[in-house]
Image 1 (cartoon, rainbow, N blue to C red):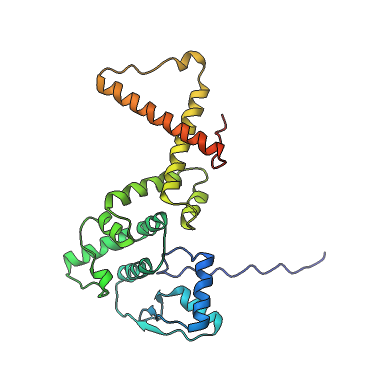
Image 2 (tube, rainbow, N blue to C red):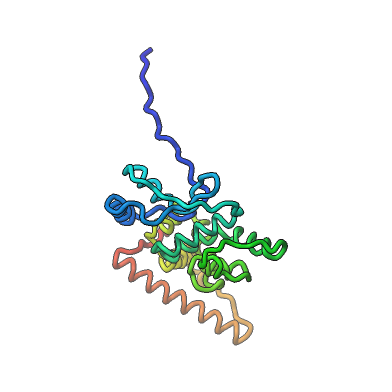
Length: 257
């Protein structure tokens, strides 16, 4: 029996506990690397009292790879939820993120903002003294999250969340969410995908019925019900036309009936 050595798999690098942002896009990574190579690390990274990076993961990694000194500042005795919020606030101020990426990050800090609100209500604990963090007002968690990630209002944030949750339920949900994480898709793309998939299901359901069953409709009992049915039909027709136009442009595919 012959023996051979199996290739050693690459090491699994655990994600840093306060790295809640998506990976840098290749162009952003290249620009940051070029800047550090020429000027060094101009903005010190932030670490806690244990040396764990709160903000500046990419700067630290690239500086180490280039053999460049990486200055740092220490923020000691911050609660865990404040470390996570600090990391998000500072990154949101610097990075150009899509609305979808902001919502995905927002979902990660909902519990952190709830903990901050509870801590301030029960113990009157001081929050992080960074101006951008102090600017948060304690209120509904969704409003606080929306403000933290720069997504508008709490209602807008909740509506975007529902779209993402619908995508997650799709058979190819992980692949669709990856499009949002990488910035390939915006929330508009996500909403369009949800709408077209809903229409595709309607088309498949309609095609599954025979001609007799297709003539059966729900009779409205009031004028309001009739108007609601007509409005729904009008929206479906408009969406189907938009879908067909996208198919003609090669931006979408027809459903398998």
